[in-house]
Image (cartoon, rainbow, N blue to C red):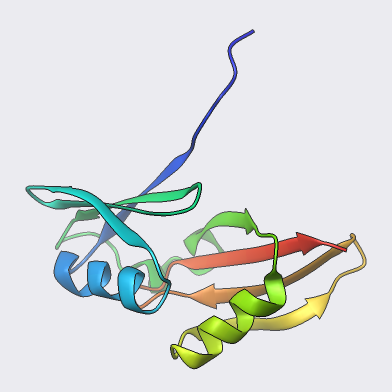
Length: 120
């Protein structure tokens, strides 16, 4: 059976430069490469493609459908502190959950929501 070796999220953003700057400065992603209308970014094995879609429904208006990923990390407390210092908007504070994860949630400048977690 084939193994899936990497995942890259694909997101519509209203302003590519603004979103790219946010993912790099606030979330600590690096630019892998650019193509017309696209930014390909990563941090470790977390990868995202940002595509400029100026006429898309703003993710903040999608309610629960604005969630797009759950990312597991190896030092959740450090990442939480890093994001606090970079001005990230939190949707959920860092907390231990009954399902065996320590996690927090954020909202990007476009309104996409992400959860980060670490096994307890």
